[in-house]
Image 1 (cartoon, one colour):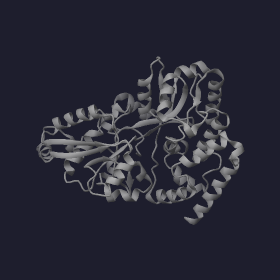
Image 2 (cartoon, rainbow, N blue to C red):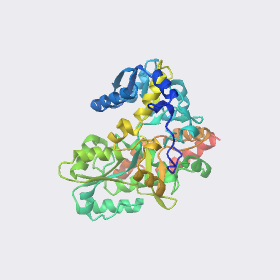
Image 3 (spheres, one colour):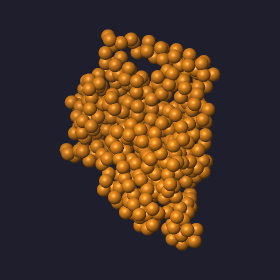
Length: 424
């Protein structure tokens, strides 16, 4: 997670080597039997079959991979984790982000952050006390997905790089087209904006906010995102009734040119492009903000994968995990992303990392900072941003039914000050 530039290619770990050395042969003999893999993908049977086939070619002693998937993954896997039988390899539930101290109760340590960051990008998605318990299944950029034809028709020639420019672009779209300028996905993806906080405040935004003693004064990351949503909602630049909005429908509307922009990951851009039936080109741009004077490209993991600490076949589970997140499996490419393994980056990807301000969506802080920040943020009610952004949208759309935006901001600031003092 902390790596900013791609360095020279590293040697593959022995567990992934095919062939030559006696050590490699011995390791291969230890990898076999059957493992169970639990994922959130219910639409990838053919891809999983191919991954299994290719993995077995590397490790002929592997007898079977049992795949299990659930559309309601977090609820499903958290229930399973009340037992010891929750697969050998599994996606880590997103809901555990707020309690990283619990990782060690359920997941096998994969190595220290310092060890893993030499080989992988973004290794602190699921870490605690400098130990990583999960690795990204892929790296996807997070940004504004847009319909090029709609923006061109509206007269928006360049993607905005600030809140002010973004609001102006949305006003042009509203004035010059029939498209909804920005679809908020009020009920589905507002929590995703938590992953944009590093774009607004850097990967150490939490310690910076704690040091500043404020979270809601102008210029602070959470406040900047709130200002963006208030500007959109108060100017009528969102879907008319966000509360009844439909996420799946919004993606098709974007593909058809009925929506101009949403905020999601590059994996969604690829999928939306496939939905287009009218030749519209779907692209993704960086978020409308500059950090330290430069537009950032934000990368994060759509899912994180780990090993059940109770697995009885950890050697095979580890080999599979490392194969699954490599470019060889094809999983990252299916998501419109790239492998987190530095060895797998092509020349274009290496150049992108070297020449741009790359920000990872997961903050890189000490456990002490993470714990203190989480305690304060949860007390204030901004741990995942969903509630606060829904409130901001409601204030913008229905000002006569709510307190003023400034009053709401001030109330949050007062709560933050009180919570910070209580957690000194």
